[in-house]
Image (cartoon, rainbow, N blue to C red; front, side):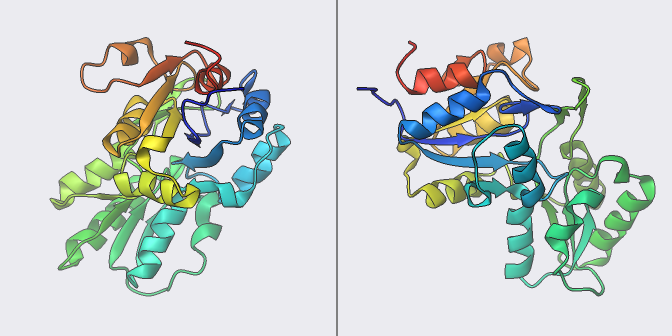
Length: 261
């Protein structure tokens, strides 16, 4: 009888289950084994270059068994915040993410929403967002994440949304509202979806700060995998200590299932 270390697992996507256009070796089978063990699963991602539907389509094509209802995205969290507070956003996002916000109201924007806009992070777009913030009596800068960089499809590191969010925040003299990882409410939303408490759950990610640090701050355990954006110096960080470090997702699952010490 397998002795589970944790009954609920939060899983990052890019850099953990897949890199570029390929599943990370062993990841498809490892996810199936986690399901067979009866674990509750929630995929949590700050990936903001694709809609949730596009993410599911891509992951199924790579061989993973998953449904859209299992995925919690930072883009959806930003959308729901904007809708809940009746804001009119100035969107600084990747063009492929636009369908997630097609129901947003038109008109003079009173908030700025930032995702990983990729090549759309131009001076003109950033300056427009800056002017929206400066024109407001109560400026709102809503960030889908605070990630500094990510492992791009060519395997090299690329700038993520965090540097651009902080540039706008610095210029406007305000604090950003982060709705994706590492914000605690994002992890709490995943726990709520699973019907779990923090001590019953573990986060698997390749981002020391966003995945592991955010999870630990929210009261969860955190497993760092040596794939994706992982760098050797992450294991020597003096401030963020993972609960466990695994070579990859398959090794992380084996540890959760009690098969590895």
